[in-house]
Image (cartoon, rainbow, N blue to C red; front, side, top):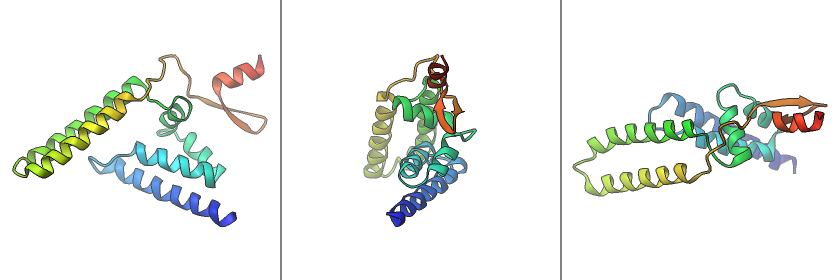
Length: 147
């Protein structure tokens, strides 16, 4: 069982690495790799799972995904906009290759549909985490526990 947890943690680290590459390489996704990393860390390493959920940059989006299986409106707008900016550049260079152009266009349309079909996180929803008695919980859960 220990080997399985290590494999999950290792795979999670690979996905974090790919996500970090996506931060600097235009057109390569970041969030999807971080979501996959979180999935792996849930099975392999509580320490890395907590690190990712509390990360200054990726944490809020991952906590929204974790809790609502969705994204905030602004996140959706940025994701779809960036997707089509980079796809537009790619499609410009692929305009003389109709088969590849069509495949790329279809993939872009599918990803756009997928992003827009996810639930939109409510405007006032909290994605903040606090620690109570050694357990990390979301802010509104902490308020219920305290009250």
